[in-house]
Image 1 (tube, rainbow, N blue to C red):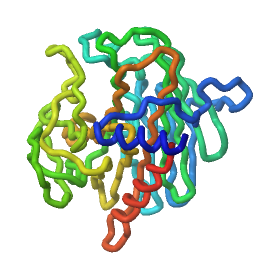
Image 2 (tube, helix red, strand yellow; image 1 turned 90 degrees about the vertical axis):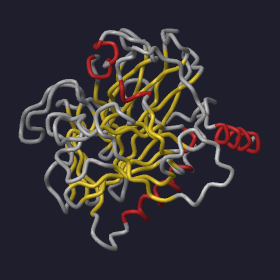
Image 3 (spheres, rainbow, N blue to C red; image 1 turned 90 degrees about the horizontal axis):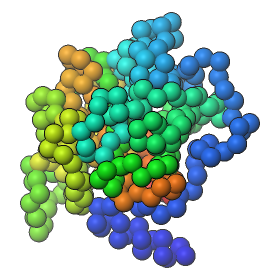
Length: 340
């Protein structure tokens, strides 16, 4: 059995496809009430190591914990580090924010932004784990649970589990999108390991990957960077309005992680190879001077009532010389690949 799973994994990675076999449940999706508690507020603060995060549902909040937080933005409303008390994210918005459910077809805005508009419920698992549960959405009928866990070293692990409850996705795949709105960083650009400008060319022998400087001139222009072995093509309507989703750059990443820098702090997002993540950026997604550092997860050939899972980690870390930021990213990348 183990050999079979390993062979499936090798084939999947070679073809650039995520695994769709049965997954080991890692959230409360499907659990009976009583295995979690319901917080009194629409947010919960988690603290561990040098990091503090405030996980919020998609309700509006305006108090000292989340000043001016707008309705519709869920995820991490505020993140702080002992080296920087100010919020990394745009205060009105959020980071690791569940933004879109789509199938590549034009729909009304409310349908494309269902994670914003359909109610979410907080589920507290323990002092370091909080979840956002969303019942099947009105349009796509996708049930989901997002687990935000603050690990011992202050690294954030976010796990999505979702179950499509009806055959509602026109093109046969599920497209999901997360956004992190960064508040006034010095540079709006991102950095990831890979190759610049190779596009879809077949190059027999590529040089060793280097750090690519990801720049996009305006919102929706060459915003998405895909993996070298990601040959997937997702059918979509030419009039599909979410320009960040399918407009690819000519860069390719070698390993699925990237980081940006804001006020002396690095913020990295790290992914499992098998999830087939696409890296996306916008120079103005959160307003003028506020870039969006995003990512996408696709589920091809989905089956109704089957559980799907994606796991990633986020690292908020000083960028001082010899701070070990890149080494920390690589360590977390390797650790993520062991999560089956």
